[in-house]
Amino acid sequence: MNTADVVFNIQRFSLHDGPGIRTTVFLKGCSMRCFWCHNPEGQHPEPELRYFPERCIACGQCVLSCPNHAHEMHDGTHAFLRENCELSGLCVETCFSRALQMEGRAMTVAQVMDEVLSDKAFYESSGGGVTLSGGEPALSKDFAREILEACKVHRLHTAIETCGEVPWASLEALLPFTDLIMMDIKHLDESKHQRATGQPNDRILSNARRLASSGKTIIVRTPIVPSVNDTEEEIIQIATFVRELITLRTSAHQNGNGEIRYELLAFHKLAAGKYPSLGLEYKAHDIEPPTKEKMTSLLNAARRCGIEASLR
Amino acid sequence: MAMKDLLKMLSANFEGLEKQRLLFVNKTPKYGNDNDEADDIMRWVFDEFYSVVNGRTNTKGGVYRINMLPTTCHVYFGSVTGASADGRKAWMPLSEGISPVQGADRKGPTAVLKSAGKMDHVRTGGTLLNQKFTPQLLEGEKGIENLSHLVRSYFTMGGHHIQFNVVNAETLRAAQVNPEQHRDLIVRVAGYSDYFCDLSVALQDEIIARTEHQGF
Image 1 (tube, rainbow over the protein chains, first blue to last red):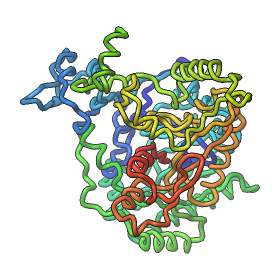
Image 2: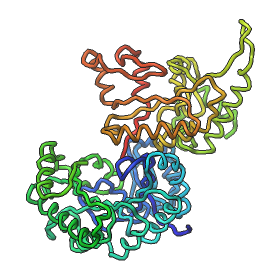
Image 3: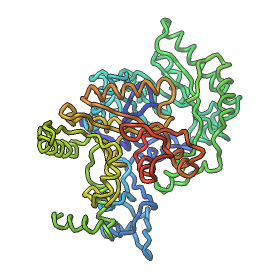
Image 4: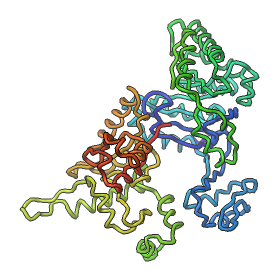
């Protein structure tokens, strides 16, 4: 219970990351860099200082509190010099307007469980539980495993959201305490995958096959991002791969253990505003979300491959 | 901070003291977040109110009981109440019934219900908790089911009454600008439902300002 790692959000009343009313714990750090990422604050494994200029009231307290000269005032306007910041966090304490905030803090398993168990009554009533997300939760293997194990002691439903780009042993360690796995497959073409996410896809696909053989319930997900994977041909490739996973499952578990389903998610731009606060550049500005018609035609293409698919 | 400094700030309605006001708004624990420190203060205030009012005789020979249902009076009461130490400026609406101060609940509806559940509802003639949801959150069978679990769990905790507004702020703002196109828009106000466009602008603003809970 003393194992600690960096958590950037604990989202209570989370309804879209598994069954029932849930709490989603977001672990910081990801192995991929998908350019449209909607949780960019989860990419870097360490805490980060976020600056929201629209909240700043130019009181100048941060300038006085910072030992590293990361804040300056020019003609009544505040400037944050990220390159000087050493994450002392002192400015955050004196920033009453919440223009400066620390994203992520090291928490122990016990601290996470304390927060998670606050909503136990809601999980019990609704068949909900806890989802580990991120970032990539399997990168914090021991921390993630201990949280899931503690949840199981309390008989909570458990789920993980993974990008799959981790050593197999890291995922395998979580399996005994995980009821539901939500895993992204973003592209079957290796070079296109690499361009879009910064990583090849061979380990992801091999992990997906091993997960399928494990008999766990799996939801395979594809975020539909125009210019990356929004053609019927590309979705049919992924859906065919999902059908292969189902075949693997059936041969490994005759009695048909947990199901494997496929979900398509539409790319959206709601995360664009997060990037500047982290000092990152948003590279999906020029991409428009796919239309409803587009999503429906891709869904139908996936279904024609003979798998259970839905839009989320 | 000394009490006399605090009182001076409140008398000044935080004029020229925005930094200090934001300290109260953003850096102090607030009721509605399942935070025991803040919720204990709520209980203390509740107990005081109860012990002062409950059982007093009225002019007709009956006795007073306490209710935690302001209907729309929280707007009026706010309009005659000076600045408060939670960072609320003078004449702004108070919170509604036992709902958290507008915007103070930052941990979502389950935390609001946990906080409200710490009140001893049985000692009142009724309590009012208002929650506002966007339609997306309650979409489909699953959305309705989750809502029912939310209500059931709240009642298990001793909650007495909860009501929901299901609209998004955009719709409400649009209705403020073009009332004739949104005449049919009904919102739960406080203990009753009303046509949004028939409400006063102050009450409309207040309904828009109430925290929107969104799923992620």
